[in-house]
Length: 296
Image 1 (cartoon, rainbow, N blue to C red):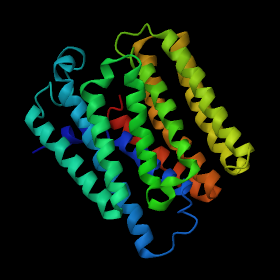
Image 2 (tube, rainbow, N blue to C red):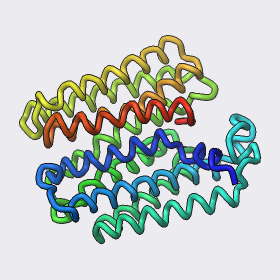
Image 3 (cartoon, rainbow, N blue to C red):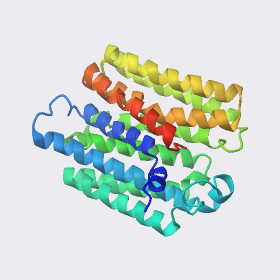
């Protein structure tokens, strides 16, 4: 059995960004600043393994449901090209989902329940949500918001915190990525990208405001937030000026990868710049994997 087609299905570059969600969530919960024992770090590893399974399972399931469409638009992908059968892909997706939920429960019951919610949310998006212009982007964004919450669940008592609203930030940003992606095959989605760019600035402004108000450390998060804003502005602006499938795909790809500096800004703001830099080191790994494996 060839492993490469299965890795293509799982989108390794995207999974790396999901790991950064978990690390950001633990930082928001204040966990990175106090984790010291082996058990503490083991719980982080459990959640990292959980998000890999959940994200991988969700994205494989997406290709299972997209088979007929991919036969026309992306015949080179593993399932329509015959490298992986639909049954094999479905088995892989469900296995990854199961592993994700199991690892989450190893951390805590709260984490396990959130993992189940992520699995359901992703499956709903894969089957139904992506076909709706408004609900689809929000559905996809909700998956990321829940993933950030999964990281925060490392301290279950913290789930009642007034900082849970931060989980809405990735909901909005990932919705902008989904809006942008809706024209990546045919192009002609300039208005969607303009709206997505406006929402990007709203997200960036919210993060900087939270820092300025003292919810996070403003100066710690600033360079990471600026990097995130710059990556998205440049890519989306080019896709607006030259509204062609190639530029749109690059904007979507950049949006997904830029989740890493976005999460690094949370980590730096809620802990310190060294932890933020450690998360940012995931960026070159994701970029390298994106050159080898599809992101969109």
